[in-house]
Image (cartoon, rainbow, N blue to C red; front, top):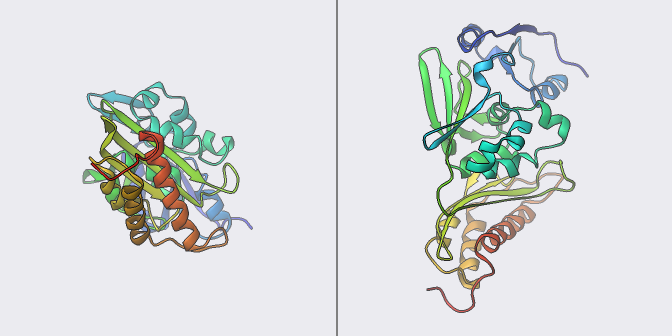
Length: 291
């Protein structure tokens, strides 16, 4: 099957892209890397009247550190995340997450902005920016908006981005002293859609979590910032503490069921991921009660 007929426009600037999006509204779709858009069009899951190609807007590319903020342009490709020394130094969670995105052909074309705007709940990068407490920068004809990553994703393939706005950048707080991260996903094969995954960012001091943001993916309709992680903060991790946090996690998750896994399996795998995160960043649970 091939895509329905559509018109094509190559935007020359952010302003030009916004003019086209305002003119066509929800009948237009933005093309950046195209790794999600084109398959959806070929399957006729979507049939836009106009494709707005933003691939040549150079101002949407680049990675820069400005004070305590790491700014990443929306057209930064997955492979650029993997190779960037700035990302490795200041947001290594993104480096590790990008390595799990599909296969090299996809990583060479797919973009950070495209992944976030597509909002696939099984995708690695949306959960990672939530764990990093990032800010999504979007532009419209009335100006820019900054949206907390935790509020940006609103459902399956749904975001706070309007049809007349363009995602232009992601702002990530640079890694603090004593920061640590964890990333792992369960998939049938490397590059397949995740069955369950966890991206976590933490501050570890004296063998304790003083901060822990645990963002699960593929276990809900959007990245889930687990409230259960708060039960692991400022307390010595013991089997009892971990069991309580695991039970809380199971209650707050509402996983979907599909051909890959049942809801119960996804909930079970999420609990395993939380335990592995604690063990990887703090070591095995201590014996005895919490202190």
